[in-house]
Image (cartoon, rainbow, N blue to C red; front, side):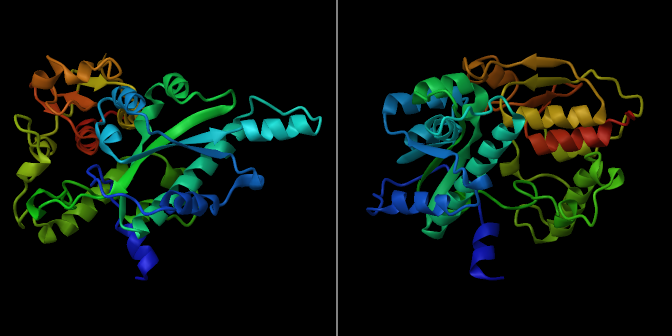
Length: 337
């Protein structure tokens, strides 16, 4: 494996940073690396905003559901899709820009993602830690207001970054199969597109589970032969989700479970999964913008970490990790589409 591939596969989100000052020119070098990314029709529709005012950072913390590392990070950038440039170019040359086309939205958003990923790779090559912040899309209108964005410019995601803080080995995030696992490459690499290979999430979930079983013997958190999750992979007072997965399956399943739902990418993953299964669950919407997930009774009755989504089981217990929720539903829901 060459150094570039090793860097890419070693990526992890970092949410704790030092106060070490950055050398002059680092930010400019990262932006230059971002500009080297591919851009559709060379439109270069990306604008990066450096957010420095503490009061604005705190508003973003509330907007994203309490992601405090936004305020704590020495650097916080917001990557925006900028259609205003192409509009201005058309106006200068006496042309009328085409507005409202889905293609424009896709081009601008993809350009931003490519630009940002180049920035991230360059930052990690310098020993910096980063964390994408997709939660700013919880309220795009408010995010645009906080940033003072003009018409034709919209925020896509944020990026907290700086030198990573060195933590004691015992407190580092584990990369075992319980805490972090990618689906195997066979789920992403296909010889051809067909309904039999593309539809449904069951094969992906099963392939990922098989991969984790193969890796189980090498995990420092789960000795071979033990079928329970390690202590650090569970929330105190919550069920061990592997126990839930291995319970006997009720073939006459009825939707008596409840999903605690909210805005944001993680609840959206579970909703997409349920849509693929053709199943509707009772839901309770949690107002993360208003901080409902960080107050009682949610903290004591659902998830003491204040994260959403959560799945309330028939026996009153809760599963609070999206991978565990999807695996539990895959194992227990046998209803055909």
